[in-house]
Image (cartoon, rainbow, N blue to C red; front, top):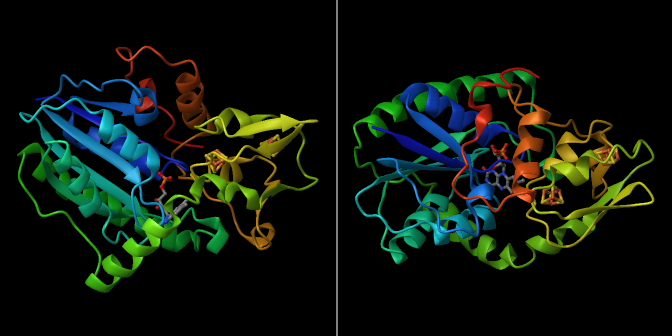
Length: 283
Ligand SMILES: Cc1cc2nc3c(=O)[nH]c(=O)nc-3n(C[C@H](O)[C@H](O)[C@H](O)COP(=O)(O)O)c2cc1C
Ligand code: SF4
Ligand code: SF4
């Protein structure tokens, strides 16, 4: 039994979750959604996993684009991991609904709590708290994997009712503003014009003018640029100069760059396996 794990990530939490599922299940392949987007996504596997970060209490645009491109095959087992920082809200219900509208059935969906990468609201928390979240997530993925291995149906996980109502409204309200939310990014004088932010952006939203980044207003708010800048020179609003940066400790810059760089050269939908599945286990 083979499993394809389609993932997207800004700071590596979802990539780590996908790797952990792959290690547990065996015979699994990791495929960045970015490489599949825009093509009719065919999978030869028996099970398809969809693994992504929760953004503003819902699905990132990239996940919606991916699901809309997924070939209709009702014989497969579909499951999802919504990787978040404690408020999954109705994200998995949203995914289930979109899939249903395409004739696909989401058999199970799980809430995976990891350290927060949403730096406009603060840092990722203490080292202790981060490590506890990662280790709890690992334990949960161990349990999930046995559900997935048996292809069991499991009700999709969700937040409390008040959260689902209120935050789903927020999601709907803010969704159309996301591409231009990059207007609050700025760069300070620590920038050494290394060009990494341009390379790492998954949607070509950064250009360099006189060696400094400018944002082009089709942002997906993955926050990879601000979190991975080696000089911590990218800021968002007023408070981020004093907030700690975060990326998953077992995911490397090379892992993330390889996703966006391969995507910018993409066009070949067949050769889409993410070759770094067994690499990048330390920074
Ligand atoms: C734009 C944005 C919005 C976010 N919204 C939520 C949210 O609604 N609920 C939540 O629990 N975490 C939220 N987060 C935190 C991420 O979901 C969480 O840190 C996730 O583990 C990041 O995964 P990644 O490293 O794969 O990108 C948000 C992060 C970003 C960048
Ligand atoms: S990654 Fe940071 S240091 Fe490098 S060009 Fe971008 S802002 Fe400047
Ligand atoms: S500009 Fe930054 S936050 Fe926006 S999509 Fe690119 S890397 Fe992500």
